[in-house]
Image 1 (spheres, helix red, strand yellow):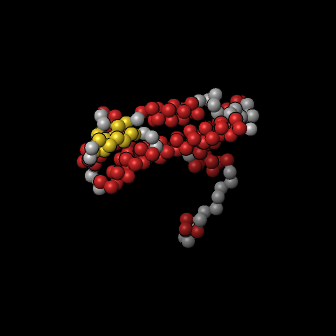
Image 2 (tube, rainbow, N blue to C red; image 1 turned 90 degrees about the horizontal axis):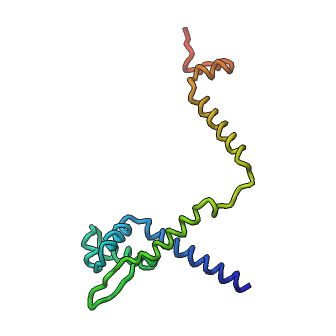
Image 3 (cartoon, rainbow, N blue to C red; image 1 turned 180 degrees about the vertical axis):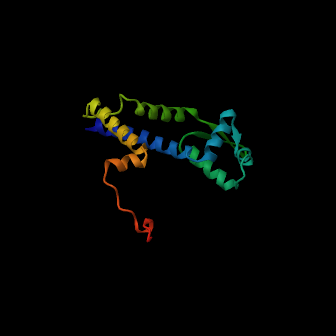
Length: 153
């Protein structure tokens, strides 16, 4: 019983880590910060000077990146230096890509042929939809004209 709990908590931890990483990557300023830090470590002031936003906003972005484990922070004297922590990002993205592999996706009960036939039916419907309106009118009885289309004379 304890083993299942440990496995479940490990899965929850990795899922939480992935959610934090993807949340951190969702904002363009945070992705830009990661690009700057990929070249070299920078201080908080150097990072904020590259953006046209208030320093507290940049500080908030840095905190989100740090909480996600994507960057590290080290205080040296009166300056805070930030550096990229690529291991977490690689781990999260690799795990996500592994989840997308066909072997990781559960197989469906439906055979392949009905799916192909469904695809053919939808192609036939789209081909019929692409035909001119006159061709459809010949298959069905003529529709009554709308009152706006009627002539009084």
